[in-house]
Amino acid sequence: MKLLYQTHSPYARKALVVAHEVGIAPRLEVIHQETSPTAKNPEVFARNPLGKVPVLLREGASPLFDSDVICAYFDSLHDGPRLIPASGEARWNALRLQAAAQGIADAGIALRWETVRRPVELRYAPLRDGYIEKLRTTYDWLENEIAPDEPLHVGHIAMATALSWIAFRELPDFRTGHPRLTEWFDAFEQRASMRATPLHGETHD
Image (tube, rainbow, N blue to C red; front, side, top):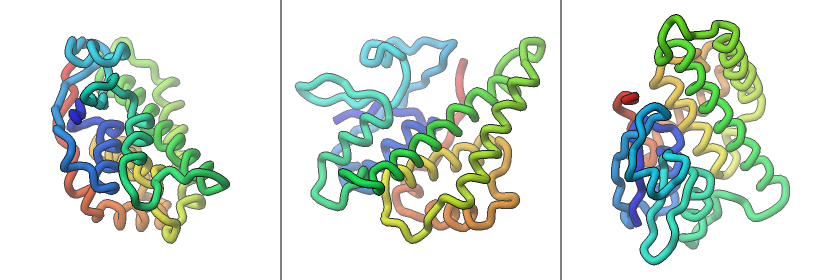
């Protein structure tokens, strides 16, 4: 299998961390692809009409996208405990945390457009402030919701990779005032799967 990847994408990293956690990373050829809403990558567009990574290329089967779908597929390829629980509240809690992680990554990307990527004269301060509020209210929610002793699931991976990207891009700090969240995140960052997938690089528009 080939994973079209981006070394500075929280979504692509989430998929690769899942692959490491379930033991299938050695089966992947990871291929970095630069993508941006303003710079079309024909190779990625040929496999995902949205033009985004990650995309999983499978021999004899159609490509898979986006990160949630790829993570679910990886979770079907191993015999260990499932990262996406099959049923009950455990399933919904995992998927809810994954959704929150997706939301803060989306908000962070949008915030960067309003602070560093869009031309200065086109930036909109009220929109910037709205994205910052989404991040801060989610940090407050996580301080009470993160359960350090809960069995590993896809929501944990999604959230850890999203928070790591937020720190990497120097977006509003989640550590200040959130000691429980910070302790959980610092411990998660030491996992082998996280150490094997460091973020690096800049977006090329």
